[in-house]
Picture (cartoon, rainbow, N blue to C red):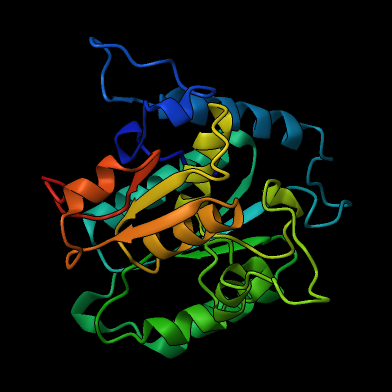
Amino acid sequence: VSSAPSSSALRIPQTKTMATTASSPSSSSPLAKDIDGKSIAAAIRSELTQQISLLPPSTASSPPGSRPGLAVMLVGQRRDSQTYVRMKQKACHDCGMNSFLRVYDNVDGDVTEELLLNQISEWNDDLAVHGILVQLPLPAHIDEEVILRAVRPDKDVDGLHPANTARLFSTSTHAGAAKLNWKDFSSLPFHVPCTPQGCIELLDRIGVDVEGKNAVVIGRSNLVGLPVAMLLLHRNATVTIVHSRTRDIEAVVKNADVVIAAVGRAKMVP
């Protein structure tokens, strides 16, 4: 239910190799075309709303899991985290999903790991909760890894549990390994991080096939950079990860067919 990434985060350079999916460049054409992430996000929400509307409504006699339910944990009073959580709740409401929110103000650092683990355990066992999101970052005195590991992998819709991460980073190229259809996220038997999946969804929605293309990912974080690089690799792109120690970043980016910026730093590319 997360909104698609903003158009500025992902651009498609108009090169000759992209002629089948981008308009041919001319002397007056821009070097890249913006992707209208807002309209794509609206279309996705409309599709989800239609699909969810076909599910039986939750009643006293119906199973508690008749409608998708998303539980979100917010610890602390960071304004950016509060904004993200409000957006997630609104997205659930707009799509007809059930939303569960647990807020811990963490005044004077009074929130303990035990308290959070107990809440996660309750959600793990709750049939009305299909997905659990722990809003990051957590306060410094909370062990983030311990909390994320406590979420059941099948409810870890952020894809941050080690079991889900391991499956994302497995190429299954050895003989006898089960092959996954990476062009259909709904067929994957595990959860993929939301923002990386959103980036690939944007490419799909505008008809870009990354197979054989040079894809550059700017940033190497566990939340976006590395996962989106793996998704591109699973789609048979040739992937280069650019980071703060990369030499001649400008030249690397200029050689790309697809560029995904996943770094919180302005003017990373000269």
